[in-house]
Length: 180
Image (cartoon, rainbow, N blue to C red; front, side, top):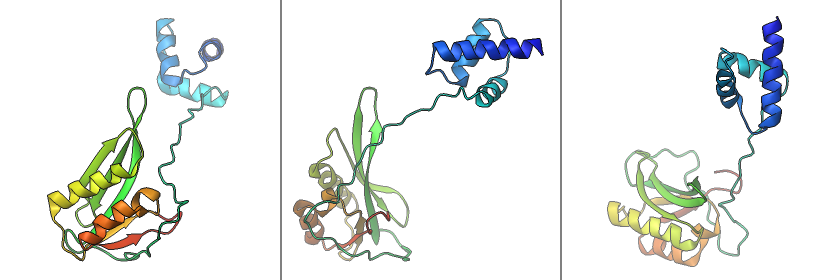
């Protein structure tokens, strides 16, 4: 039991000195201090003593639906795509790179779930989604009745994006707010 108490004291002192250390780093530090201990045991002790650090992930908002552009109804609710290039779904996400974030606009074919177009940018602008849409149209040349589903964000509701969809004969569909 003495070993267990010494181990707990050592874990507590390391956790206080290095508040951002998780159980893996603390296990490595214990190994350097010649404690032969399994990472699972360190995790258990840290959990029992509330020593686990909580990672605060930065959340980035990619959808701004506070705009005056037209909102379209959801045309694919409870609908399954039975062949390629009938339903495309579009969305934006962000990717953490070394020192910042970049935005990824992607268009997927709902049938195959394959990426049919994408674009990456440092800024969350309408040009990002327009570039992704143009690359998808160029690569896949969809039928004129293809349904394009997106959220109600300004990047998908803007005039430039809607004009391209209408020029290429897409049926425009948007998911309802808060329901991707």
